Length: 78
Image (cartoon, rainbow, N blue to C red; front, side, top):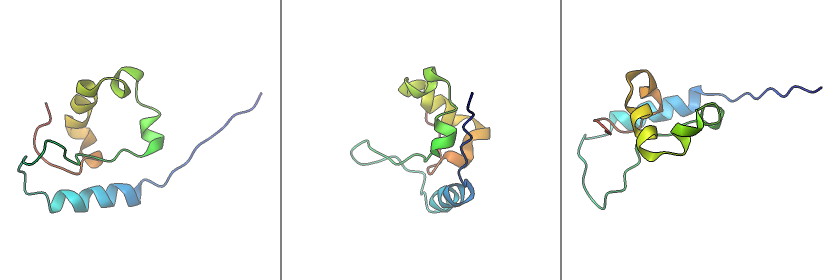
């Protein structure tokens, strides 16, 4: 039997997300498409299928305070 371990450096992604949040003006405008977050693949693959496959569930997951590091935009998503 084989075991596969995946690793990914999260610090660069989380630092970029934090930097983008600094410049967010908090307004929701335009064509309705906004860059609201970046989730590293190692985290994405660990999410439950119901979160990955349901847009509203994903927004609710991103809205939780403990998941703020994955956000690039402030404000409520739900």
